[in-house]
Length: 203
Image 1 (cartoon, helix red, strand yellow):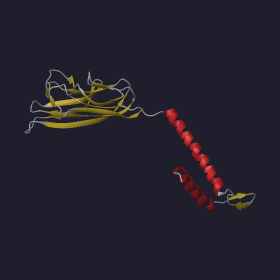
Image 2 (tube, rainbow, N blue to C red):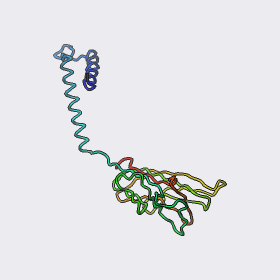
Image 3 (cartoon, rainbow, N blue to C red):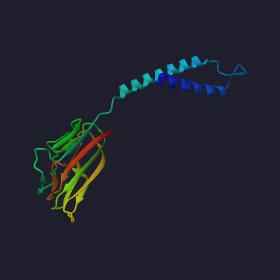
Image 4 (cartoon, helix red, strand yellow):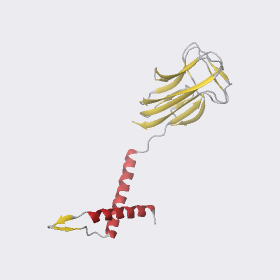
């Protein structure tokens, strides 16, 4: 017996139990429904088939949600491991190693993600620093900083951390990770500095 027919039979059994407890008046006399089990089963099958068609029609109208996701690291195989920075000015971190870029929203030439679908997005970045100096990096949306990651030189001499945020994005909005002036990050083939994001749902 198929799963579909088993579900219909189960519904029919439940309906039969309910009908056994419910009566109604017709021309002043009480009676139970006269529909046979076979008739009820056929009616349920028709209703189920109609519902499945309606669901399929709604799916075709709505369409599948767009798939947008990226994950990148600062240095690729062609980049010499070591410190990136310091610079005298705020600098976008150009993540060169692309692990995934579904939807092509991330541009490795600029280090910037651009939203082509309006919706709610999740972003996360990690940062690794060497001995000196202290380091600060922030996620920026358009020209406004959103969240930052701050590392202060300690006794060990190297440190790592991460931060994340959920942001509403309009079409054309841009997100990047920027290194603050006179700061450095350190990376190599272990890919300790990463930047990732994906669309949670369109709006």
